[in-house]
Length: 320
Image (cartoon, rainbow, N blue to C red):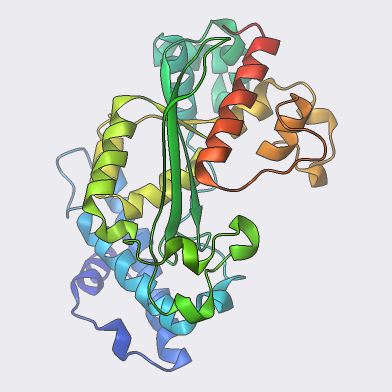
C-alpha cells in the first residue's frame, strides 16, 4: 500500500457492522492499520500547514477500525502487537520536556544531553525545576488506541516545588459500546473498571465537551504522565485537535518514566524483571507507596501517586 492508496482506503465508504466473518474482519483491520501508519508518517513529516490531508482522516479511520475490532472480538487481539502505540517519546520531545521544566532553551539542554540523549540525566539535574504542571493518566480497554476505548481519565495540577500539593482534581469515567454490557469491560483485571462504572456514560470520542476540556488543560500547561508516549498515542486518536496542537508545539508531554530511568541511581542496579521504572516500583523506593500497597490503576489516584513520587525524587536530587 502506498500513500495514495492509504488516503483512498481512509476515504472509502465502509460499514464495519456488515463485516462478519473472521477472515474479512482481519483483512479489514490489517488494511486499516497499515493505512493509518502511512498516513501518520506522512502527516507528521509534512511542514505545519502543508499536510496532504487533515488529521481528522486518521482519527475517523481509527474510529472505523475500533468498530471492526469490536466485531472481531477485542480479547482475541490481545496478543496482536499494537501498531498505533508509540514505545517512547522522541529525543526531541525529551529535550523539550527538560527545557520547559527548567525554563531554558532546548539548544542548551541538547548540548548537555549529547548525541542520542546519552547524557540527558545530567541535564535533568543541572538546573532547578519550577512552574505548574498538569498531571494526567488514563485507563483503557486495549494497548492500541485504534482498537480500544478510554474508560477513565484523571488529571490535576501541581507547582514544581518541594511542598506543593496537587490542585483542581478532575476524574471521569467514559462509556463504551453496549455490547460490553454482557461481555464485560476489557482489561477489567488491570483497572477493575466494571460495566456499572461506565454505563450511561458517553464514550470520549462522542463527548466533545470533555475532549475540549482535556485539550484546554494540556495546552495550558506542560503535562506529565508515566510513560507519556502511551497517553500521547491515545490522545492523538481520541481527542479532536490534540495532534494538531501537539505538532504546533502548544502541547508538551513530559515522561516521568524517563525521569525515573535517568536520575534514580537505584534503577540501573535493579533486575529488569522487577520493572524498576514502573510507577509502583519507583513509588515504593521513594516511600510514596508502602510495601504492602499497590498502584490502583485509576486515573486520578495514579496521577496523585506520580506527582508525589516525582516530588520525592526531585527533593532527593536537590532539583527544586
